Length: 353
Image (cartoon, rainbow, N blue to C red; front, side):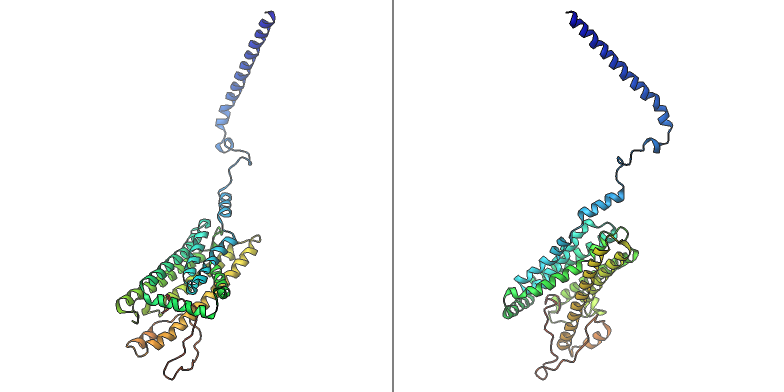
């Protein structure tokens, strides 16, 4: 009993000591409160650098690194759609073209750090979406183009099996990757120049020109027949607004990437920037040649088909043909059969007529 009373008294004493110590600490802290209130807020709120939240630029850089597509993912988005060419030869240069462009824009869009980069990626996505919608409409509503598609497929099968198309399909995929390459230059740039913004605006002008040309020609031919000559609307000043619009879009896209790379990449990213610049130049040169070849071929077919049609000569004099390849003097076939028509696999018959 004596030991228990002694232990209890010591425990009560220790509790009193702890209570007194706690009150002393509270009083000491309270004594510093007026002094802290008189200090500037910056000093009061200051925290060790290790505890400070990261800056906005750091957060933005981390977000870009997390959302930026890798080179492999962009290559897959650009090149895998070209495999449609193994199914239908014509699809490798029509739906594959639109799908690769759409997927590339959608893939890069979340990593865009500026409005210019966002508009750049969105333009490619919108172009691919619009193109595929137009191609699907033409294929479903006009029997002539389904016949063209089947003729192209039959001709391709006569030349060999489906595996023989692999080199051509691979070249198409590489072309689509080159067209998407400028996005990898504008998306991570923190401060693209004003010139890049102006070039992106030109991209949308090209997009609208190509869309207006396809829509106008479709409406006129639906009313007057597939053999009607279209000379109104955007065709009043441009003989081939779809090709001219595409050439403007892709040229402005490549130039926007180059202008951004010239002002926004330091020594750490210069190697990757040079790689994307090289792919961008390859894509621009390839699509420019393809579109110029398509416009040249269409010029020859129109000259043969509409020669002698009232107003055709006057329209050709007043409308710009766009960028075409140098004309050659083709020998006549079968006397009065007209100039030899160039046989090419691009553009798809649903685009060039």
